Amino acid sequence: MSLKSVKVATKAYGDQKPGTSGLRKAVKVFQQENYTENFVQAILTALGECLKGSKLIVGGDGRFYVREAVDLIIKIAAANGVSKLWVGQDGILSTPALSALIRQHGATGGIVLTASHNPGGPDHDFGIKFNIANGGPAPDAVTTNIFNISKSLREYSIVPDLAADISKIGTQTFTVDGRSFTVEVIDPVEDYLRLMKEIFDFPAIKQLLSGAQTGSPFKVLVNSMNGVTGPYVDRIFVVELGAPADNTVNTVPLEDFGGLHPDPNLTYAAELVDALRRGDYDFGAAFDGDGDRNMILGRKAFFVTPTDSLAVLADNLDCIPYFRRTGVKGFARSMPTGAAVDRVAVAKNKELFVVPTGWKFFGNLMDAGRISLCGEESFGTGSDHIREKDGVWAALAWLSIVQHLGKPVDQILRDHWAKYGRNFFTRYDYEGCAVEPCDRMMSELEALVTAPGFVGRQLTAGGKSYTVRLGDNFQYRDPIDCSVTTKQGLRVLFEDGSCLVFRLSGTGSSGATVRLYVDSYEADPATHGEDAQVSAAAKPRQHRAFSLSPELAWETQCLVICSIQSTV
Ligand code: VG1
Ligand code: CO
Image (cartoon, rainbow, N blue to C red; front, side, top):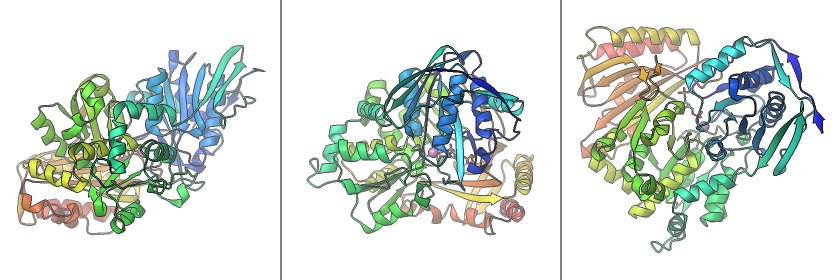
């Protein structure tokens, strides 16, 4: 069938500025006239000379509006001279699977439809993210270009009559403006599964789960929170690794995540935490809406903080076949992430990089072969097998370590702390704040922490004294392309390695979210059994700083400043 593209006049929107991870807004914003069309056109236009004949991967986390968006992307891509799209069946692809597919097919890039851990449904959030040819989120230069194009867009191109069926696996070819345009609908799980099997020793993990290794089954509970990982988890854990079917839950991706907030942390994955507390499971894992975040629990809901998870993985990577093949390169973490991995890097004589928040900052380091493993405190862990963080990969990596060491999760952590000391890490989020007072708070805090004389001050909390080593607004110079990214969060670093960080979130769909990160280091084994949130070292600073209502951004600001000043 021969089809023709048309140009449609549109008015530019001024708010299509991608944040930490793509453009995230309420569904209703994307449903405005031409809003989604404009942004998709801006992404394609930004490809410049690479656009004609380009090949893209398209898919999303199954949330409300993914199908509509996939349909628009197909029609707009066809009109813009894209030659081929690989689309996940029914529009489903986890973020890590999409990253893997870009690399596998040598695609020009990919379009990821997700607002990650933000709730889904007609009254909640949607998002569009562009990933580049290495499989990773577009770096700032690309997203800035997309934003600039979106601000002056006058028209977009579309093939209104192109009807591709994304419910059936197979290839559909169309002739558009005399050119050939192919849509290949693929199984979302198949290629990802193959990659996991190349990375991990599936038979060994299977033996661990079945009990063939130790004489008693190692019982796992995996909760997909009604997000995109469901099909991956069922296939990998039940079909391939032989876990009983009832050891995976919430594995049907739902448009509204069944009303869940698909963010795998102690608050929102309470269902998993409760089940582990009550039951006799050895291991629990939960993932976010798009499958790139993970939470790991041990017996009786023993919580592995992402900061510790990264450090333990770093310490044990060579028990995973992939890393035995590739060798273990350096490690990296985002700036607010606790510094536990830093000590592993020192012990193993590996390079350690500290980058701004957001996975896009790890891509260059991986492409250059400088790092094997990286992570963020926000439940993101991943390696250079792809260029996104990867929830299911993290769970399999943990199972590999448990299998290899022959120790349960809690014991692995205790042994790790005994060897390296422990970082007590906590993050506080103050959501739904007004933008202006938060901006004011950040600029006043910046003045305070960068003032002459701040370095060297003694701050005391809980009877312990901390000397300020550095106060700044974090700036990052990429060691590979030398690009400089400024204003990535206010840091107060102390001489013992403890650290306070304040930053504004870049993933909210409205208003401002203030994040406070507290990382305290304790070498003393007597403290290691404590819960991170009541650690002697961490608690006073956190609670003195933020004892008022989070909605009161201005008061919060006063308190933060008071807390720092009053301890001087
Ligand atoms: C948050 C996290 C950050 C993560 C980002 C995307 O960003 O803090 O570490 O990379 O979400 O995660 P922010 O700007 O709100 O702090 V996801 O799972 O959305 O792709
Ligand atoms: Co996510």
